Length: 100
Image 1 (cartoon, rainbow, N blue to C red):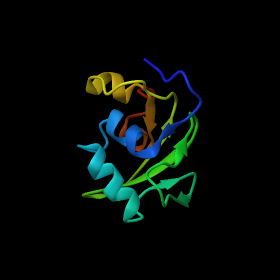
Image 2: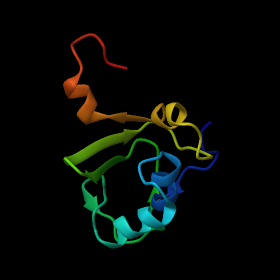
Image 3: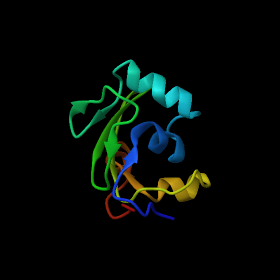
């Protein structure tokens, strides 16, 4: 399922895509300056994100870069959430010819 509007709040997006365990955690990451959209640090949890945007997120082992293909309308199952974005870090680790 994709979002009917043309944008979604960054905190809601991170939670819907299961990149943050809670919306509150997503808000804390944004407030701490850990999230970038299209290379720019996001300062507010209400920052609008659009399909096609590139997000840079912190992880325990480094940095994760994703491109949004579509916007979600709900917090669905993990497979549904993952189908809405392309993870650039995973693409590097996949053998040639197996890209999603």
